Image 1: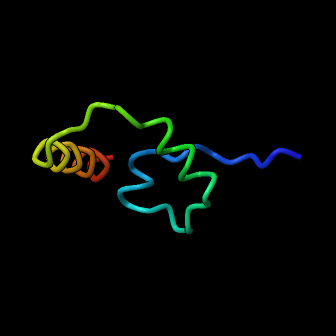
Image 2: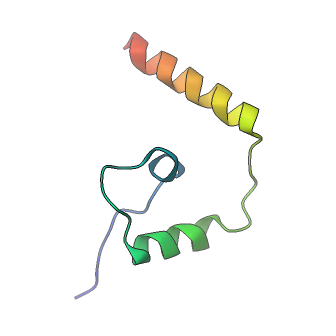
Length: 58
């Protein structure tokens, strides 16, 4: 039987998802995101603030 798991998101990795990541999850995430374009820290902080603000308004 194949071990199925939900692919990790950047949000999961940055903020955690409430459980430890398995080796398979980490390998899949790192392989999928390798070579991707990064964001400067200031842009990441700005995006997080916007998401938190939107979530608080709902």
